[in-house]
Length: 294
Image (cartoon, rainbow, N blue to C red; front, top):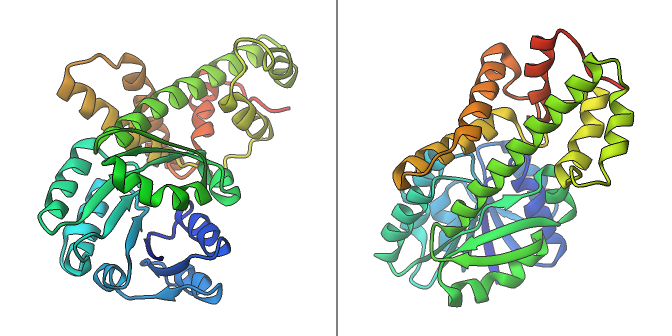
């Protein structure tokens, strides 16, 4: 099976590499020429447009920053829709608005093209080692055809419902991740300000009810002051804005998300938008006039 892969960023590039390692024939496209060249050296075929990628592929995977990028790449001039044949499956693994997922799917369906929305969680480390959590929305028969492909990139691959359900699930994930990071930051700043070693606090609580995957992944980096992006603050802002927009459309409260997005927007305005979302602790550190380090 020939797979098209569009979007070779922090997440997309290692995901595409894992598909190549698994023996899949890949056709790739990205605006980053260096990333394209790297995949070409590993054996991928390259094409200058999404249309040409789709013409050569039975399955087209997109991994792009946000809703407008997906709409442009899939539905725009020279996009996937112009090259896709009837029966092609488009798997959008970007984290976008579920409303947009449904809009794009509806347009593709007019050409007999099926779409799945399949956003991921786990950040760059899990993209590299192929252990992402992948949450999928769309028709069950289409999912069955690509499940083995998705399992090359993820340790957990779950069909959660119809189109858009994948991104609803991802938004739920991002609410919980943001809340965990904010809670961790608040706790470690409190400990530091109260003259208690934050590293010892982390070790003491990680095995109890407060322990979490987020805590284990982010606390060691925060304690070293390492905010190299695995998942950028600006991208989490994008996800939380999608949370707020979706919540408004279904009339449900999101006070925690509203508070955390404001914190992240403050950091972004201060030039920290490219920091890892664990860098949210800097918002607390500035107000507390203390720096958390081991």
